[in-house]
Image 1 (cartoon, one colour):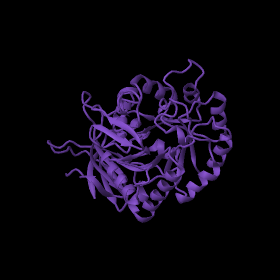
Image 2 (cartoon, rainbow, N blue to C red; image 1 turned 120 degrees about the vertical axis):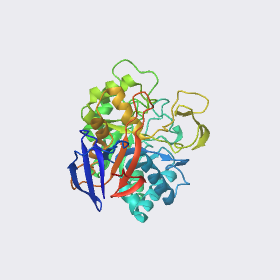
Image 3 (cartoon, rainbow, N blue to C red; image 1 turned 30 degrees about the vertical axis):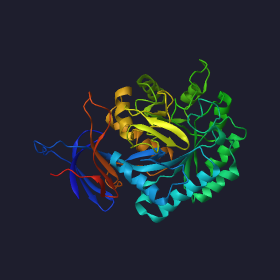
Image 4 (spheres, one colour; image 1 turned 135 degrees about the vertical axis):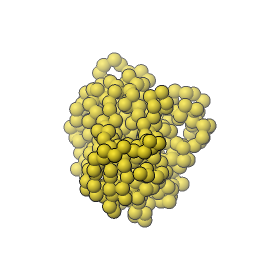
Length: 391
């Protein structure tokens, strides 16, 4: 299989040859494309480590089935996403156990799902119960870390829990973090009202990431110190960012990226299970939510309290270019290489011998809405969305 595309990292035209599930050759091309043909960019498939569901189905639900897990994974091919972390948000012990089992079963019975699921992300339930930091997570299920409980979930997941978001202010958190990290789980700080000392203790114990920095916070904070400054200044923490244009103002994105450096920033979508549905009101996990015409997902009846996201990862790629002034290559790495490295996973590279998990796309004009325009998505060398360009 051969096709012509423009490299995401240097913009050069290249002819790619795929064999089985690998990139067999990449040859520079001097041949101009046909006059009516616009050559798409090609990049490794996007990696989204925070996906809560799609199309009306949450991962945190007793209605989740292995078939629905696989369906959600496949639905994200339309957005160029080839590796995901199904994310379970704060609910009862029963819901977490069920979700872990459903994801594990989907991976065990479907090879494509197994390839695309990087690991399970538990966003909770060990989060702050305070209004503001807990966001839309139900207070009644926010609680202190419990190692035995976590081990039961890891057993239900057949060892697939790879990332956990927690608030470090709970008693015993440093000990929990150290045990989790020793077992191979990446610990991220989020939905927290922690003090400087509590954040430092969690990082000393092995926490390496901040979950959607700047969100899941009080509406008003003391000027300094506060938990945003603490995490922003901590070089041992990378930061995931929701750059959908709603969760963080452009100025904040620019500041965060410059302070952290692009190498320590990860783009996530945080798409809700309601993502992909039309504008309107919906009930999710017993809470009435609303998708607004501009794409914001909010608690119904108001337009400020966000409850997850409804826009795909490609929106963040374009927005971080516009907001922070980074080039395409840097933005793509923030949605591919950076998350994979932080989760100690194989990194997709546009090089001979690299995995043929690829996305072909066009960039939107500056005056048009931010979103990568997907032409094709390939997993293991197979076209799973769209079509390859013809010569």
